[in-house]
Length: 309
Image (cartoon, rainbow, N blue to C red; front, side):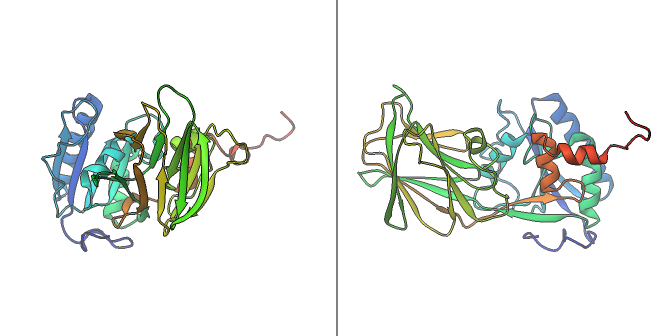
């Protein structure tokens, strides 16, 4: 792991591990689970910092930085909680275990009932760290003003009110690629491919790949399809004539309304977001469970009855 020898895949923890637990402290299940896990870990001799938020959306208090010496952040909540935690950690990412107290839970894929066992597996070294692409979105104004946002899931360019189509010009490495005429454009990472991108009809990309997915929203030209390209390239987006309500949105947060002449630059960020997986919760199991995949697999798992139905 990136934070020292206390947690190493394939090796039991030889020293006390430094845990941080985050979540929406206003929610009783989060507060209860935090207390249970913290008590278990402290009894085992580990250090636990409970950083439960009092904000309505569960965002960790900005003034409270993630401890620099943390080995693992345990996020209690849903995928939104993980996105907020990744933003909170900023350019100093710490490996994360996501415990699902939300709804769908693609990122927070450990059920609450399995949280204690997952931590025991991690402390025994039976885990794998999976790095995920993060990105920077820069909005460069004509007056030289720069807005920068670090993201994990996606940047979205949305037409907004009065809800007429807009033109969205895309350049790749300085070369004109295409101009979309659409209600918007989603630029997604693989980990975000199962979020807004999937809802818009985009593909699922294995989350440990380094790629960006470009999915237009309701394109006027039917030949405008989703494109997958390398994260090593530099992407620039310009909306020559935005609507009054056109906006740039990163991971579900409106960063700024768009004005004519704004340049939106998207590139791979230096930090990586690391999720910790145990043997019980792998990538395809998550897809099967969350998307109700694998009817054939489930049928194969059912015992067959002899002598007919």
